[in-house]
Amino acid sequence: MSQRIRERLEDCPVIAAVRDEEGLRECLKTDCGIVFILYGDIMNIVSVVERVKEKKRLAMVHMDLIAGLGSREISVDFLYETVRADGIISTKPALVRRAGELGMSTVMRFFVIDSMALENIQRQCEQARPDCIEILPGVMPKVIRRIVRTVRQPVIAGGLLTDKEDVMAALNAGAVSVSTTNRELWYA
Image (tube, rainbow, N blue to C red; front, top):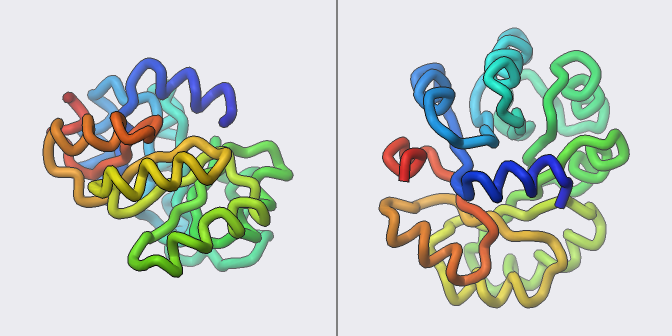
């Protein structure tokens, strides 16, 4: 895990995931040191990232969700050179690998929907070499424990977290942090 991410997570293990302007405004009032940007397009992503960075937060852009960005490595170059994002989130190993080559922080997102998806995590991590992995849904402590034992990367639990009990269960299972769009948990 990059030093930048580690320091921020030590201060606050909750990552604010924002999917609209209202969420962005709200998260910038919190102590969350990392913001997962889950919305935008190629016309406004520069200003979204600038606003996050003005507040001294790490801006992690979920590439797969930004309208107008392609799934080729040149899109990573755009986020690095033009947008100046601190890092990316993606489900695509080639994009994660390219961002790592550029020195960006990287989170590879996995949807653990069945045993086949679970088995593919280690192989894809070896290919992409992300700084962290994000497991969705994040309300599966037994599965989180299993993944933590099998991969080298720190695990972030995300998705379907509804209360502080869910956050604590994920952290107690070995996740280093949680990412959530649930605004109440940004203040927990």
